[in-house]
Amino acid sequence: MSVEVTGVDDVLVRLARFGRAANDMPSAFDAIGAAVAARARTLAPVRSGRLSSSIVASRGGKFASVQAGGGSVVYAGVQEYGWPGHNIAAQPYLRPAADTSTPEAVDELTDELRRQIQALGLD
Image (tube, rainbow, N blue to C red; front, side, top):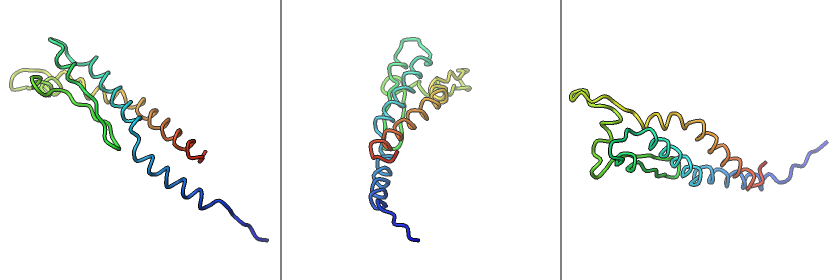
C-alpha cells in the first residue's frame, strides 16, 4: 500500500503567508487602540477637558499604543499615578481602560486571524 500526498507545497506557501499576515495586523491594532483611547477619555478626570482631549492611539506592526498628555497637559502622569509628596491622589484612567478592554482586544485579534485564515484558504 502506498499513499500519495499532494498539495503540501501549496499549504506551506499559504502558512508562510499567514505568518507574515499575522505579524502585521494594522486594522486590528487600529481598532484596539481606538477602543482603549475612547474608554480612557471617558475615565479621565475632567476639569478643562484638555486631558481627555490629549488621549490618542497609535500602532506599530505588532502593538497598539495609547498616550495621554504632552504640550500643555504635563499633568497626565500625575493624574494617572498621583503625587503623594504634593497630596495628589492617583485617578487612574489609562490602566483601567487598557485592563477592561482586554476581552475586546482578544476578540479583535481572533477575528482578524480568522479573516486571514479564510483569505488564504486555510480554513
